[in-house]
Image (spheres, one colour):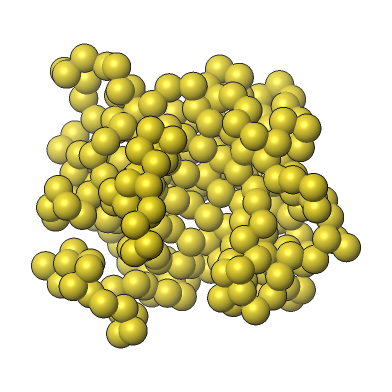
Amino acid sequence: MSFYKGYRNLWGANHQSVDNSGITIWLDSSSGSGFKSVKPFRSGYFGASIKLQPGYTAGVITAFYLSNNEAHPGFHDEVDIEFLGTTFGKPYTLQTNVYIRGSGDGRIIGREMKFHLWFDPTRHFHHYAILWNPKEIIFLVDDVPIRRYPRKSAATFPLRPMWVYGSIWDASSWATEDGKYKADYRYQPFIGKFTNFKASGCTAYAPAWCRPVSASPFRSGGLSGQQYRAMQWVQSHFLVYDYCRDYKRDHSLTPECWR
């Protein structure tokens, strides 16, 4: 879809430029920018082709994500694809994350899995997508599944309607090597380009018979054997952090890791 068919500016209107089908957003010392889908969804496939800025981008996050934080402030759900900026000569990190009902109580429980990519995301556009249905969340890069987050209980899975967002912003306190490297505005503006938007699924207003989408040829969901092997290949070669394997974490808060 074209940008205006599905999205509107959310903030930083003077830091974004819309062309026929896509949008360019940028961050400088005065502001970043963000956009939001017109409709909320209760399930669906949401994707965009994104091209990132090369060079020094430490502290800068370019994001494409689902959230209901405006509808449920302090108690929201979120599903993230975030590109964590980097320093010269080091690759971007793609961080996937899932939050369930809560970020305002001071105990943010993230479910991060981080990846390096098998290509340079600054040279060309690549397609990044989130598939979310009542059974699972699947993160995809160029149609390759990199992570599957199954619903193991209602307490560990987002089920309330969410909107689709994109943004670029300064997260110097944590984005690059846990905040070691900050945004350096000598290199501004930091630019993120989005195009080839896709959104299909059940809006929050769809009738009850609206069928959730599947990532595989099976209407019941899950991954095909080929997709599962592709995901194993990605996770064996490019996974750089898995919250379930972080011994410093309190896994009583993330029971899906051991159930």
